[in-house]
Length: 501
Ligand code: GLU
Image 1 (tube, rainbow, N blue to C red):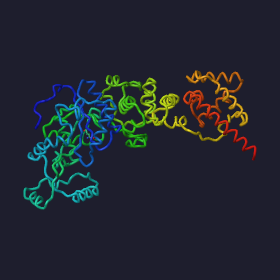
Image 2 (image 1 turned 120 degrees about the vertical axis):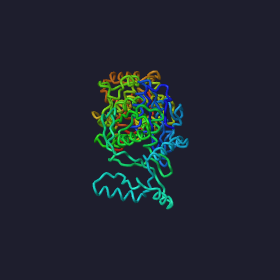
Image 3 (image 1 turned 60 degrees about the vertical axis):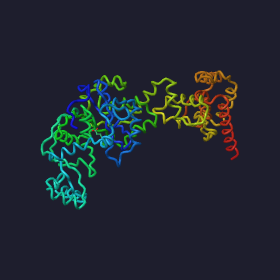
């Protein structure tokens, strides 16, 4: 099973991979890992592979695999080889690789050569060992109890029905490697001791399956999150023991909350799915995550995919953790939303406004608040009032602050009569409506607020909303005039009520 020749014709070209465990939805960190691998492959003419690491059967689900693939596709990060796409190095799911008996020969080789051994320790024994080590202030490394079991010892354990895991006999030496981001890393085998590489049912653990697959798939560069850095020396020792080629490693800096703790919900939504639901654009997410721990060495903040492919370099990835800044991501998303044509914008925005109403009205409503949103889930509360059958607000809200209730009522009555007389051509654009309102103000020698304020409030029922010209354009003349008359009635009633007190 050991690879003797390389299968990849493009062996000199980088082969990189994203290897998610389908135990949750795609995390922002996973999106960044994918992007950096993808960028590296696109830039170098290499191959980007998607492998599913589902050996942890208790936590992996087909549903999560599906959502991860969907989210990667939504981001526009297609893979050249891997699950669903296929390729010469398949299968690309570890469970299928296990069924194809890919890992067993490697485990056997380690056992036969004395580089691994069966361990029969019980959970209770291991817990006890850990307590003793902790009390003595030592690393909780395995005690080595089963390292030198004789055939007789083993037979006794087997007879008593104990099941064994397989442990790697870690060479007690310094492991040195050059991480492409972190530079020289040295860790001593004593620091982690003999670790488990196969479960009691014979299935391989992460360290082993991952290192075997990277070698068999001829992965040249392992670009992954810093949380995997402690695994790397173990994997290098395993690769050496199995005479497998050791890839180059690049560990991407952690993504942090503003207080520099590990990224959590406090910093913002943590999964790509949530950003999709909130109405973010894939290009904005890509641009944002590209800058999480990497920068092009310029102050340029808006970078297209093509620019990223051109500028990306592993050398420019930072060692220090990258703080996740939701305000910046929102700002970037707004920039990308602005770039869309009206047609493109409406196409993605309309589904966010789930109201049963005339399509044109919905579109106008959305356009009227377009400048106010940074992501599309902000739309519904902003446009709700357009679709309300009855507005509920305090009549005093209709009174312009520099005016009185009686004066506001008079102005509202007069302007409503004027608006009711306007021809439909005026309602065709916001500009025409604005000009008509301004002309009315000028002709009647009024202050803008005297007219615009009560009209806007009667149309919206809100303290803050788009201007009256926007609302009239969305509602149309009939609904607009109806709301204005309701406002008049409300104010009149409140004046009558107060005069009777
Ligand atoms: N399956 C691992 C994870 O989801 C990936 C490990 C790697 O990239 O080497 O974290």
